[in-house]
Image 1 (cartoon, rainbow, N blue to C red):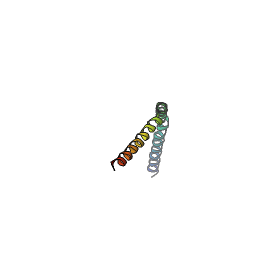
Image 2 (cartoon, rainbow, N blue to C red):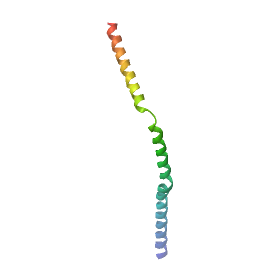
Image 3 (cartoon, rainbow, N blue to C red):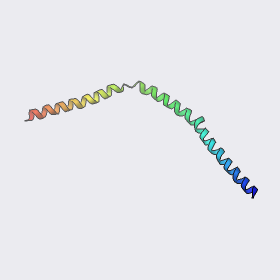
Image 4 (cartoon, rainbow, N blue to C red):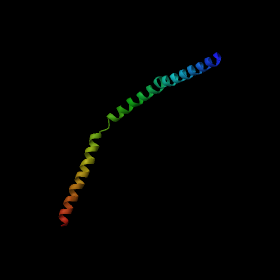
Length: 76
């Protein structure tokens, strides 16, 4: 009975060690690569003029709306 109890305890300890190893693997191996990738992408994105593209998009729709209103007014 004691040997079975010890065996179960050892299995639980082994599972706990495996779980800790997997949790540490993320922190030690995966997280640094993710952080490095995020730093590279933020530097690349900082150089893209996002405000200009948004301005042109909104201006295009506004111009289209004004032209439609003028066309509808002249159509009467």
